[in-house]
Length: 144
Figure 1 (cartoon, rainbow, N blue to C red):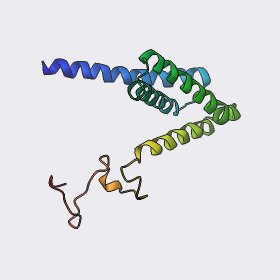
Figure 2: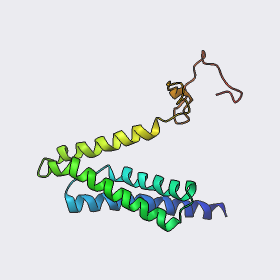
Figure 3: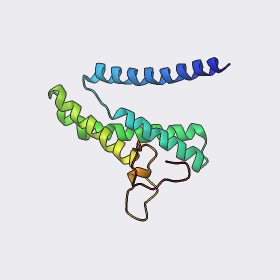
Figure 4: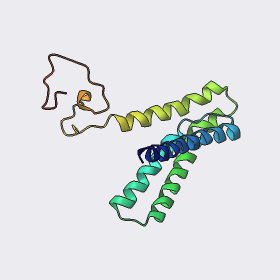
């Protein structure tokens, strides 16, 4: 029975990877440029659906429509500001704005912590940081 759960999880995760690859392939095939920012736009759409559906209690269909509208406007804005001036430029020059958008959005969302009021960022307490053995650092009850 556990194998069936692993199989379903693997197929669903593989389907997500296939959709991401299909998105990159379609964008590159049509526009002849790599756009690494489209995953971040989809992430923003996911946040919009989550907050409008869960926090505001909207109908799920309306939440998805709202996210589609916002992501469309964001995508058009990114295309007009970052990509349209680079039409006909070398491939590497077109790759840089998309990578910059991706880095900006990734750093914007991954460096959040619970220390907003103090103004300090303690990245050692962030769960994504791999903790190293430091004999001078005080340990909590779990030994971490």
